[in-house]
Length: 107
Image (cartoon, rainbow, N blue to C red; front, side):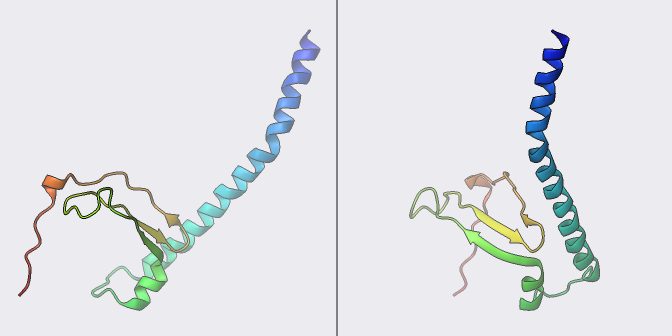
């Protein structure tokens, strides 16, 4: 009985091993990419002006999604910023429509 239990447990662990190894590899790559991003960020600690060169250095792409309600001034709209080396950072906090300040129009 103990031998059968041991064999079953060993089979489950053997099946899970490749998945665990790929997860470890992904985490190592994430650490390496994060370190590369931080090295870049340390070089530019006092940014006075946002230039196209800085944008290309730090940002891979920006994805702007459609509004949930078309033609609405106050409907939420999702914007994803994909950073170079580290990918898209999730931010689930969104401001409620009443928190938005009206932007004054320039004539």
